[in-house]
Image 1 (cartoon, rainbow, N blue to C red):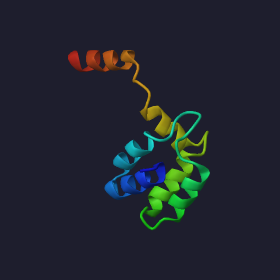
Image 2 (tube, rainbow, N blue to C red):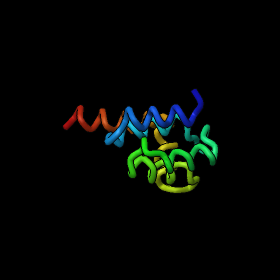
Image 3 (cartoon, rainbow, N blue to C red):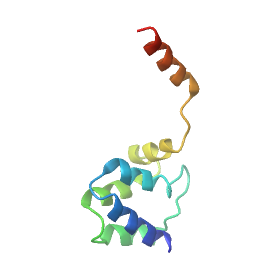
Image 4 (cartoon, helix red, strand yellow):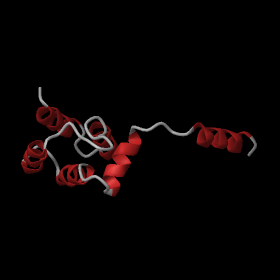
Length: 94
């Protein structure tokens, strides 16, 4: 299975579920690169297997610097522990 086929299956599995679709995108899109070729992206955009939302979000996710790309990349980053500690203190005393 190549990356194009993987994303078609991902699109079918996550149809109408944004969070699930973004979890699939984070597996192929990284800060400065992607496993998908320009041809793969074009074929996916032309595919009947993807919803219009999936097509638009994929197109934006592979555009480095777009808010969608930044969000997908952020999904792969660990949350700073300071934020977790702050939340724990907030709910511990209040």
